[in-house]
Structure formats: structure tokens, C-alpha cells
Image 1 (spheres, helix red, strand yellow):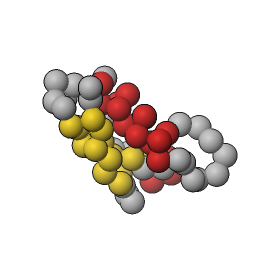
Image 2 (tube, helix red, strand yellow):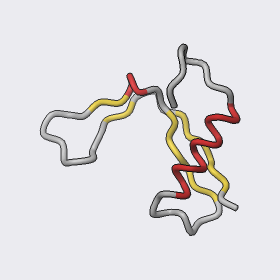
Image 3 (tube, one colour):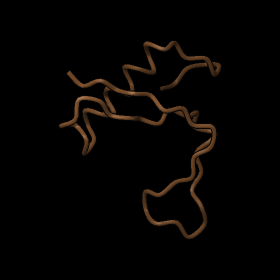
Image 4 (cartoon, one colour):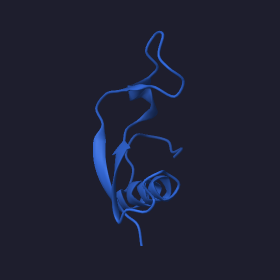
Length: 66
């Protein structure tokens, strides 16, 4: 989500979490935990496998799939 500043409304975070959950391998579950974090706190460790990242200061959001 792109926005000036670092404060996001809870409804926007919840909507993004639902989109991520619907497009994940866990889309058959009713509640999916999703990590919400600012981009500056995501980094790729040296010699990491493709798709593997290191996350700091994450927040877990429960996404409810209807």
C-alpha cells in the first residue's frame, strides 16, 4: 500500500490482509494470520533462498475470509 506517512487506517490494513489471504495457499481456511509491516523493515538476508526475507517490527493481522 503506498501512502505518504506511516499511519494507515485499520480498515485499509484489514482489506489488504484479506486480499493477501484470498490469494495465498491458506485460502480455504476461514481465518488466516497475515503479517503487516512497513517496507523498510523487510530485508533479504545474504545467501537467502528465493522468496525468503527477514522481517522486523511485524504486526499479526487476522484476515477473515468470507
